[in-house]
Length: 370
Image (cartoon, rainbow, N blue to C red; front, side, top):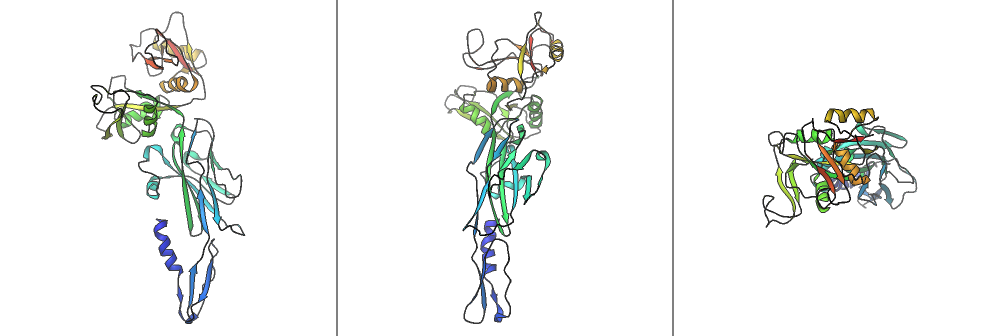
């Protein structure tokens, strides 16, 4: 919108003063105005301002869950000012699940305010309250520092610097390093509507994966022939080896998409995204093995809690957990993580092996989280 207003602003600033009967006083907002006589007794004002530049050396930043991250943003003037100006900075955030187009002012109609600052005064908002600050390591540095990164902090952040009539911004993408995994209901395949899929991922210490996260997982070899919800409300699935029943052998490898589906009426599986956990996932072995109720109690007696699926996947991918022993997890499934494929431990590639959801009275060991 600002780009549309600038020509109008320039036209408004090029004003004629009738009969030279007065002069408009200079307006101190970072621009320079000059009063010039046109030789006909009429004064003219024209715009001759400095330009505000807002830049980021890193258009995207990757970090780990629970850590701190800095989103770089710097501003300067051309030509440089001899005296500093009072500027206002506003950081806004567009969550990853609402990004549907490249960065543009129109994209931020659904933005959430993160922080507003002017001089030494600042205010943070919502879930970012108390977790964000400006770095201010040098003049013009308005970089945003976010502490205790959470799963849902991913998305596109906009740094907007405002100086009077001048307003410039830059965007920075924030990604978390993690793992995407398919997830289905205890009732079987295709039992989640969109909101059920959201809740299912959340229950497993994860969040619905974005298209970018699923695409990256496909590039790393994820192959799954069951469609699942993504955070943007689309339904897709990744195929690395084309085959019958998964789009056909004649269709190239890639993400198969059903497009946007009705979030209430249509049912599919889910693709969840889990990032690193602060604690430790470990295998707890019992000589007599345990049913599900006993497994939950065994972890509690050990000062822990039974691990969730997202925690096991994160420990496997990000911490190298490798154990060729099946164990109960919090959702009633039985799984085990393999980082070094070997005989008698499932398929010939790394992964989290699943026994599905066996009857809760059967006996296994358990994976705990502390």
